[in-house]
Amino acid sequence: MGKNEAVVDVLLDRYGRTFAKESGIKLADQPKPLYQLLVLATLLSARISADVAVAAAVELFKAGYGTPKAMREASWQDRVDALGRGHYRRYDERTSTMLGEGAELLMERWKGDLRRLREEAGGEDRRIRQLLMEFPGIGPTGADIFLREVQAVWPQVAPHLDQKVLDGAEKLGLPRQERRLAGLAHSNDELARLSAALVRVSRSKKTVDEVMSAAAR
Image 1: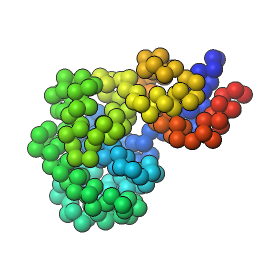
Image 2: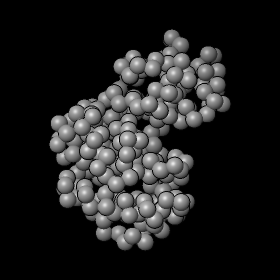
Image 3: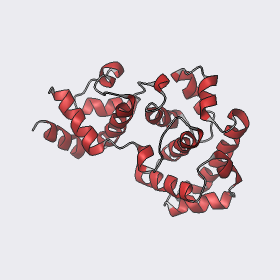
Image 4: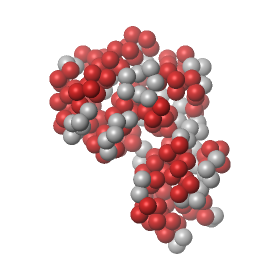
């Protein structure tokens, strides 16, 4: 096994859980889990820890707001309360408004189904990214988060390896070119897991050292 393959094996084993999985989303090419991923991407976009964003998503879904219809029908205060239970407090009021408006947009324009957005974009990665950024709270970062995770079930957008993923790869001595890095994964699902692992690892020099040490054994 080569050095790169050894590093990837350690990454997948120790850090290869997608943020969707951590939030309890059973990702599939279906309207409900795709919407839940959009909610998660909205929450992860704020300057707040990923753990808090995941906890807030879990609370929203536990409260029953896992579909655009339910999110739209929930009161503003109900959404604020759910976000608060996930300790998503600095941005709770603004985010509650954005989630309500985003659910409304999805219902009105794409009948609650993000697969319709994908069809409108002709399955083209860049155009999907542009359309995602029409949702309140989804900027370039949020669109990349969504695409990074959805590539597990939307082969049209794979490989989608954004700057954070490539930065993590560079710190571990992995290829920084999108196609070469993607070639180290054996499936689109594994590519989404590898992307999540690289984002996690890129935030901590200690974690980078740990992965490199384990891969060298």
